[in-house]
Image 1 (cartoon, rainbow, N blue to C red):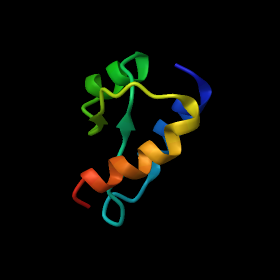
Image 2: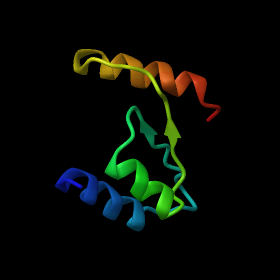
Image 3: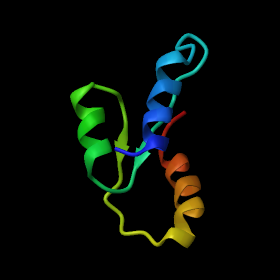
Length: 68
């Protein structure tokens, strides 16, 4: 697992859970997917093939599918 994912996990650990409910969206399975499952950290897995140029649009569309 890379440095950005480790930093993100550390950020989540320190986040005030009374004020924030983070939403994690994964677009592919891998080490990070397995880690989140193992640690029972909530996330959404969307099995959608993506191109890097379309990630931002896909994230916005994904957020519309999730009831906030």
